[in-house]
Length: 301
Image (cartoon, rainbow, N blue to C red; front, side, top):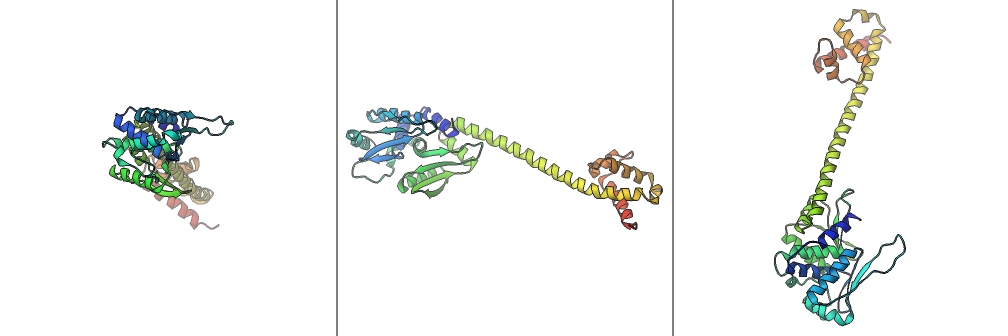
């Protein structure tokens, strides 16, 4: 089951006050496929959402509808449909303060009876037209809203919550979206989906730890590459000096460092200094190696 499906299942199972249940039911249908006297229909890939919509509609309007799920071929998406019969559409519209005269779909905020109902309403809108990406792959939550007026209604509620989603148009629909992991966690927490919010937080923390390790590894690899590159030039110089008469004239401390570099090309300057019989600082090692390279450069080729 996808993360989006799991989230919707969690939302459907939340216990709410009657007023909030009413607001959520209203959002489920007004943000659904169709909501006017010509048809009141919710279409969803989630059987849980469809069943919840039918049950809540019966509770709040006294109208019972069936969930229709046509048989599909293997590998295709099954769409669950909740439709109100023509003879009962006026009753549903009136139950939510709409009528045949109000053909254009827009939010009737009178259905949000108390301050607590705003979150429940947004939850219903998400169940009807929302999706969220797998947080393992990225952070994106969106509402694919049927028209501009309904999108304006959602934006107003988000603004009251202090949240500011992005908005665009896609194939004639209004898309309201969140792309920040922090914003998505905040939103899900406000909507009561604590379990899904916690799961995203855990995934984010794991990603951050993995990224920190990767950055450290890349940093260490870059340093090793830099050390090996510098070491190659030093070894070339040391071999040149070692094959010359000047080798026997070198001080013992300088010969020891030269032999150590030949034996350990991967050592950093600090590691070379610590491995000497009489340890010296990084700058001391650098000074001695620079001297060896200068001697080699001064020799005739």
